[in-house]
Length: 340
Image (cartoon, rainbow, N blue to C red):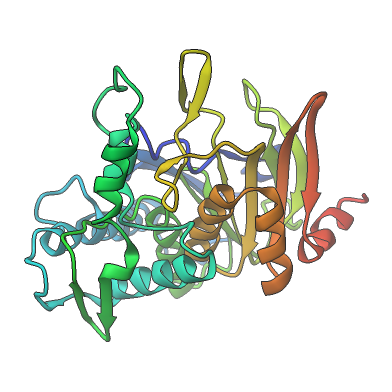
């Protein structure tokens, strides 16, 4: 399990449109099930003969369970929790999968100037967005400063398949592991000769080939309001998509709204007007982590990084009359494909 109260809203729903849900052929299947504290929804199209539906789903479940066993903070003997329990300075051998996710997380941490940090969990908990209930009083400067002296991805050192820490930090991969799980399932499907699919775990998704109607996959970016309303439909095949936002999990104290998205650099909830960030990338782990990082950064800094790195990014920014759409140059082709 990965999702807790503070993380559940980080990955917002990306709505697969009706075109992706109509499965007519006997070799076009929909597969669903629980995983990582949420659920997965998979559509596979033109499945090669010789593959049985029940066996394929069993293989998918096993792959996602392996991700849990490697990276969950809710399984006491998971590979990640064994590292979290290791002593400061101890060199811990990790699997290739865990090393790959940690390396990607450290890269995004550096590129986002610290906005993405997999050691931020204690701050999330302090503000009442973890497993504990909301605090009776807003955390004070001293409490925040005390945690910030310990936390930080700069305490982590990854050398090959060896991971160590220079301070007593603990890693939580909730903001990137679901995307990694999507990628793992996508690779599994491709290894079985399945070239047309949509894989979604907790709102993060990856597509390839065509949908059951033989057309490119279309998804909808959700409007940050109550209910599932599509703000913008886009055509995305052969790519991964992830969305992050702060509008579904917050509380108010003395008339002030505190969002669940914590900026590791300040130790406090973000206060900007960026409501949601959607990222399109070649793999879902990258899209997942970047969406969280850019959401922390705010609209101006997010677009600046997107243009510097050529990232396909779509932002919805709170405005007096609704939401303002902003997007990077690399995202424009996805809008133009819809006739905009």
